[in-house]
Image (cartoon, rainbow, N blue to C red; front, side, top):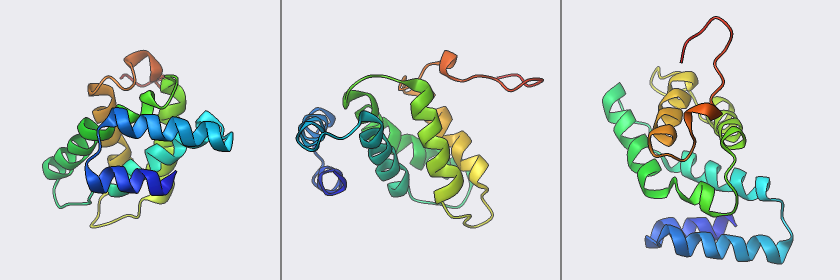
Length: 133
């Protein structure tokens, strides 16, 4: 699946074509949907460049989420909580701390972008006790 995503990104495939290919690969390999979603989120997150400054970083995150974010839901089923969970693991544990940017800031920026792009909904985000959204 990783190679399929790499090709889709490199060749500028449509989200629809990429999702059909991933669904076909998922059925052929009998993979769980969560594993496919993990792969899609990981590949998107890993391709977002780390840049200097908050606004430029948010712009890069938004650019990638606007272009490829719909693929997260088009592979089959919409599960906002699962998507947030996967996104958190990918950004909090797997992205290196680069140029003083904390992994929490990166996660917050990615979460804002997927929420703004309607990949997840506000009710998928559960506020922590004593905190406001």
